[in-house]
Image (cartoon, rainbow, N blue to C red):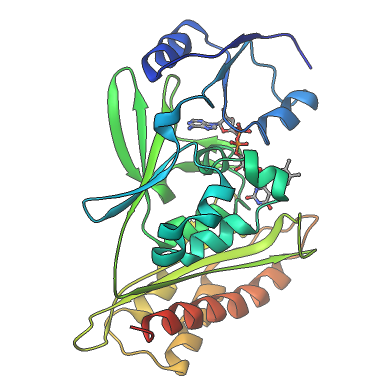
Length: 288
Ligand SMILES: Cc1cc2nc3c(=O)[nH]c(=O)nc-3n(C[C@H](O)[C@H](O)[C@H](O)COP(=O)(O)OP(=O)(O)OC[C@H]3O[C@@H](n4cnc5c(N)ncnc54)[C@H](O)[C@@H]3O)c2cc1C
């Protein structure tokens, strides 16, 4: 591990100043990804800016019809949150499957995003929920759809001096959502493929008003697959419709080939997992 200065700012403004002063900084949240990269010399920052003490970036609230997650909210907090389990069970399930209890206790939702692994588990669930991320810097704030955050493995649109403060998505009564993951083991496994899906209906007609389907580990970034979404919107649920949408997603993706799977296998499994995700999302709506 190379040498670096360690800073623990007391507030966001102090963090922004430190980021401005240090060109080669890395932010430290839970450290579950960063510490591995430091130990393996994959990163050689000149300064570590530890933001993990910022209480204002922790926790889950409902504000003006949106669920708001502080970027430093841990996977354990997500998994156990009553708000998340009630309104976004797909996210609770995704958080519950990240790593091990130790990783979930330290790892944060913001860190999961900025690490920008194509296999990050909370990301497809959040994209399916229509999440937006707020990026803050000493120049102000801006909010972007989560799917626009990623540029490639380990790469995001975050500029020098910017950090993620919150992630938010709408509460919706007539929405069902699901997360599905295939790993090589039942626990502590990087996803071979993961899927987030949501369906929202018009309660009067039961016609599908909105649909979102996102997949991880099939490209260099998590991806939203509109080919499947378009098939669903404006129609009534039927097993045939779900099958058609799942096949369209599998057809549209161009999966990566890596140590965990071949591209052909990923395409086959995508069809199965998307179908399961849409069926589970639908089963939540019919409960109302
Ligand atoms: C053994 C092990 C198992 C794992 N299993 C899984 C798994 O099953 N699924 C999965 O998805 N992930 C897994 N991970 C990856 C990791 O735990 C998650 O990505 C975690 O959520 C990262 O959060 P963190 O707070 O620890 O991030 P950190 O390590 O602190 O930071 C990660 C990166 O994000 C940046 N960053 C952090 N917070 C912010 C912010 N608010 N704004 C801007 N930049 C920020 C940091 O500078 C750093 O570059 C695993 C990791 C390990 C070591």
